[in-house]
Image (cartoon, rainbow, N blue to C red):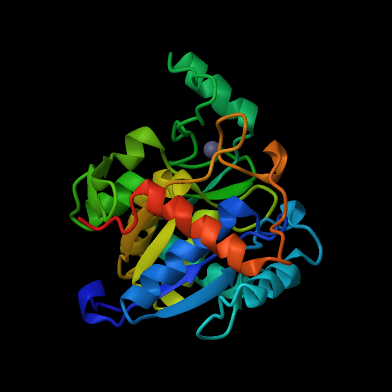
Length: 287
Ligand SMILES: [Zn+2]
């Protein structure tokens, strides 16, 4: 797994979470990844991201796949389903534990908030807490509830700088100091479910994905995913984050802020609208 993206044939993917049906916003992400794959003569794959079982709606996976078929967006290969891949994620976690790059964490949310307050760094409203590293050197007899990645140690052991630089095909150069800005993030949650970051990285590698084209709302995950790719010895894909369709409240369009399922009596019109949104946003984005 040492090939660089430029030497691997283009593979793109669309990875919906079955928390509801596709709507205008999710179709933009699907179409962007599809068009980019086609423009590069590449393959386009679909992956159902249902690791967060409690948030998934029964039957939504099948309905999303049916919606894609109606739209003529046919995947060039078998659909991958994350809820079937527990043993693969477990193996990835074990490989990180074996290198002392993952550790158990016994903290509850209020433990974390208390530790941040006593360190004088309370979490600002609407921001997620930077884990203060309480359990990095052990859980002091408490039972581990989740597993976290020791970000600084991974980067140090691999001889990488603390500040990660990466290029986005639309947004240009990006930087993030993951250890300071995000902290040691979760790999397996306290409820036993696999964390999104681990599943995405393992699956992108398994599917041979060279190009991630997805909504800008996921931009902030990228640096964490690159750290995990390095830790697991997986190649880093190219990234292209596309603008997201906004709901009436100015936030990303979602079921919660009024997104209606696509009207698939008119599939061509749905595609034209998604295409028009991309064109208005400046598609194609490569500079
Ligand atoms: Zn902890």
